[in-house]
Amino acid sequence: MTTSHRHVNRDAEKALEHFQRNQNLPVNTLPPEILHLVFLPVAGFNRAHYACLLPLRMVCKYWAEVIDNSPELWEPIGSYHHPELQALIIQNSRNHPLSVEYDETTWDDDPEGHVKMAAFSSLIKSTATRWKALVNRLARSMGSDSWTLSLPLHNLRHLQITAPSWRDLRSSLDAPKLSNLSINGCSLDLRPLSGLQVLTLGSTNPTFCEFMAVLKASPCLQFLSLRKTWFRTGIEQLPNSSNNKVFLPQLHGLQVYKVSAQSTHFLLECIEAPSLETFTVTMRYKYIAEDCTQLCESSGRYIGAFPLPPSKEARVSIGVTEQQFKFGVGGRTVVIRSPAWTRDDGPQRKLEYLASALKRLDHRACEEVRILELDCWDEGRVPEYLRIVHSRFPRIDKIVLRDARAVETQIGAVFQYLSSPSQMELTEEWLLPKLKKIEADICISTDTGVVERIVYLIKARKAAEQTEEITELKISCAAGAIEPGTLEMIRQYVMLFDLTEV
Image (cartoon, rainbow, N blue to C red; front, side):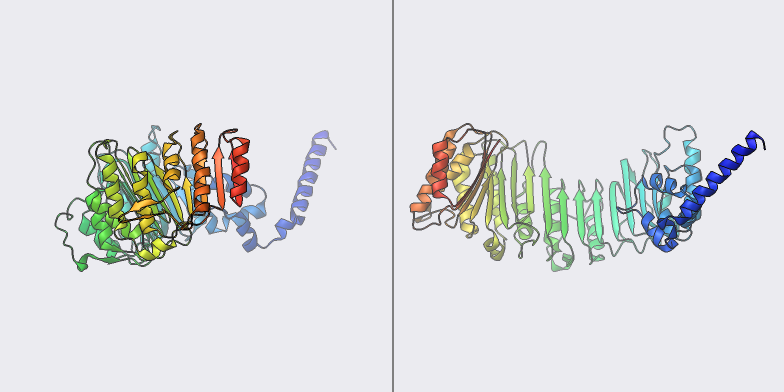
């Protein structure tokens, strides 16, 4: 026997040995229907899916057979995949639903890019009725329609369309099972749509009537987001009538960002959402701000709706800086930011907005609130905000004070006005009489007067008959900011003292 023959026999023996060992591995004794579950992505499909799946397919013949005969593993397909992999996906997915990512910009830097996109388009066109999800990224083009949107998408449930520059899409969607729609940077005819559960509109411009028609046709809508969206027509003629009301009993989340105050006001007045948990309205202006009085009043109806979200703390948050007003209850908030606010009209305007937001709060929700989170930039307005909170939220027993802008004066002012009775119309009253807990972050403060005001407040409340005693105090401050004698005094007055030095 020659040396070459001995090497061949040795290689064959090793191959047989590996084969027998693989056959006896416990994992290879699992039935195919169990093994394919091991290969399914735990966290859902993503772009790295096949980078993980294909090496598994090369481990052994049995694994390759299981993977190739598991259509569920071949669900995602994208224009960024290699043409050979695209063909393999179509083959092995059989009749299983597909999640398609069609990015018109994938091959922009490839001289043969248009050929590859054409081949991919031809490959997936016949599978349109199998698509359950489509992410369509449009190119910078003067063209209008995207051919994918004119296909019979009879089983499509998730659709995301994004464009880097404005695109006016005129296709009428044929997607009767669509439940999740996201549009950004383009227009789309919304009239044929119904039964949506999630609707996200960004930088688009439907008419108000079209938009309301979609909402009325989607009574099971669970989440609605409008971002930099403007309504072309319809707002100015909108009658204040019950015919415009839309009842959305399953709506849990509503987000509005940089939509006109008038449009947002009308929208909030039209919607009835008794199950709303997450609510955020954010207005940001560069130059001249709109009058947001009506917007705040409409927002207040949702912010103070009863009951408060069970997943959130029952707290009222008021944040007032030179350029921003924020008000929220239980995690539902309205935020207005305007650099154009001046010291002359800004402070009064923010108080007016707060008064508008409070008009329609449900008194039952107000009675649930136990925590006040206050950040007031204007020290002179602190007593006004405290009096407003005192009059509307009678059961507050904890106050949280934080300030990351190195302005500690408002924190000291809060302690000052809570340390003695305040004038309330015809009588004097202790503000927040049920207050028992204080949490203050004074890390940026070097003013020991703040700590002295805390101590004075604790003593004053202990001596007063009309208020509860302070029993819990949590302070975060710079290391060594509080003298040892003061620390000992605080421990004598409160039951629970938590000090964090940084």
